[in-house]
Length: 442
Image 1 (spheres, rainbow, N blue to C red):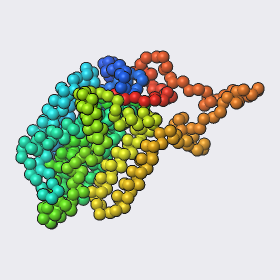
Image 2: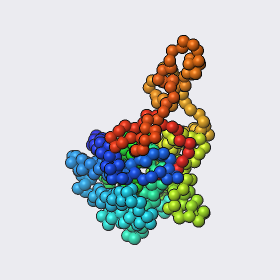
Image 3: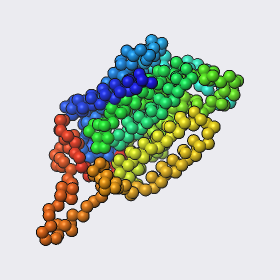
Image 4: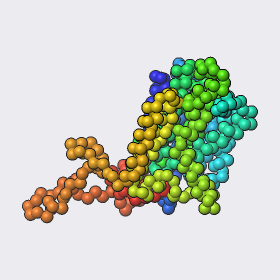
């Protein structure tokens, strides 16, 4: 665990430190597309954040290769090299798309090629446990086809949900955290060495997202773009494929018949067979978007304003609150699935999930509720959570002192000045921004 945490910290540090220079490079390279009708942000914001995330991925793998215990992952398995080669290809296509707007079909073909590159190097699904049947071995073409389909679906699910500041990075970070706990349990609790690569991939993916989030939270200074969203989607899919293709029911120490073992361990294999259960929100958004666009006679890859986060904005939630609600549901589904896989016989887990789901529904029905911090804590919270102080009465009374800075209307810095989020390549971001009403994905 100590070496995994060290790898996580190195990945966070490298990604965080690289994002600032990458932002300046993106501005200088002109990777700042004009505002589109479906965009939420109001000022041109640089993309290419995926460059910093790819740097964090390379740093995490390189650092882990030089650690005493994690070095065995690279010596006994070719999966880290397969991940790096596929990630490099999909990242390069994403960088070109952030700059030149590549056609959607070309990107789809590149995703399939990147998945094929990993399959050729051994990162593929070899068998799946089927309820009532047992472990089913897949032929080469079946495993390869299922692997490519899973990679493409996960990449596009993450790409579709990248519509608000900090949304995709935060949701993938939550998902990878839950997946790390599950994979580490298999590796450490059951002694399955084949789960070590997936555990490493999850730790590095968490580091990539955590290092990028401080620059991407609302108001974002830089977007990850397709170079980042497709990259983290591929890493997430690679971890799920790695652990699915290597773990069999008999390795879990249950000496039952194959059919009985599958029934007994079905909750444990849910995250293995269906990693989409911990990316349920992005996948649901992807499927709904395909159905919606096809029903309208549009291309499934045509952009629109009907994503889940757009609907949260339309019913009255603020930008930050919409992101936090999506975080909540992602954490509930991801960690709820992992908890149920560990203790499937405990009814209290189901009750907790039901109660938290009810809390989430209440939050969805309170779009106008704005929490206010107590007065003693106002100096520790952002201005939007402070109580408004009446200044008009004091100004109308003769001899009244002048209003303080906190009573003055707050004007966003840089209004009327063009730039990247109201700032130049080396300038700071605005502290106070007008609240957007509603919008759509980038």
